[in-house]
Length: 253
Length: 318
Image (cartoon, rainbow over all chains, first blue to last red; front, side, top):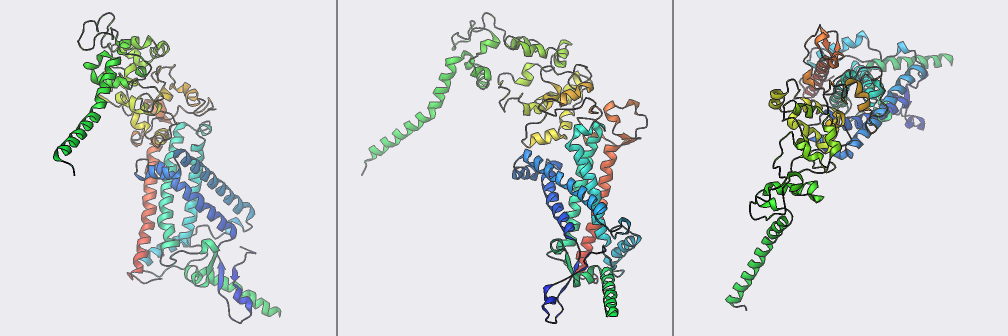
């Protein structure tokens, strides 16, 4: 993003003790971190309060409902957290369309053909037939995470609102569609839950690469080491830009 | 030191006390029964059930329903017990007459119901007062143990309505999956988890005056649904244009077989809106998510496993 700080330099550089401090690379803005935190909070509440209703006959279903404080409280929690998530979705789309100044179509989050190539190369890498692909700012996995969550949010929020206000919805759609909403809502929620708990948490928590966790979700930064390893193309690009800048400064002197 | 005689005395004394304690409840219960109901000697079980009856607690006796003279000597099967207006066990189409003596309004409502209409048509097995309220163990509606308590209504109706033999033998065409399909609804899921402020059978179908869905006076007749669902304590403010009749209230996964239907004229009107072209959306959406979930989780979980294996030096790390 133009005007966005790409590097964050730790204090030691300012100490003037001639030692280069550790360099951090800006991964997420505070705004993005905040969105992610709200997402975590609402998502976990929604999963805990929603799954006992998706699987009412499971032994843990009444246990969780009782722990939450009864069925009415479960419903209240689910509706409140759901409203929070809907607002988050609206804020996210609104912010990144109207406030974010980077041209919409030039953003690095859009899927490209390279991602398809990288996806295939990753599979080949896993079976030992190719090098690991080099990723730019967003790897295909991260793009899939993002767009998966995006699609899931749209599905869950729309069907969730239909179920929250069924009789308002029924002024426009037949009752049958409210039923279809319950199918879409719960199946999509199950997919999202499995994906987050298995795949996303593997990538950011359990994987030996980052265990116990990648701290980027708290600090918004990546270390130089991580940057070189996980986003080598972006690292090279940043370094190239930095060099250009410093050359310009030298030239001006 | 105590002598052996003294010891024996103490033991006996203790046993007597023990026996006495054991016998006290027996004496009291027999005494209690003789006090109020002379029928107890022979109809022990029935009278025991009657103890839980709200009518018993309000001071009514056997004679109030069965007639006869309950003041007669209890120790003899006496002609005098069954004297006068004794009616014994009322026949199924006469039960209403017994109850209507004190509950005229309820009986009047009941006589507009499909159940009564069936009894009139010569199907005495159709539900009458006692099938929902109990025979001798009639409890107050507000009693959680009452079979006609709000939250017990599904189980009570299911006694007959989930009974395939009963439904098909006498009344051709009545669906026996009504309780199963109700179990798929939010109403039941909430109810079974202890949230009782939700609709059970009687809230939609009515209780005494329950009617066939095809009857224009029925609370579940499509055009009456907005009013039924929009009751003050349920979903107030339901718009009367709401397309609430165009879907299955009693829905279940197995009702959507995925069979392609090109000619929809033979479909039930409630089923039509589930179709997009010849496709039953409820079936195909579920299939879509099964494939999507299996595919996405399968591929990615497979990668997680491969990634993990790479840690065990199955191949070179990146």
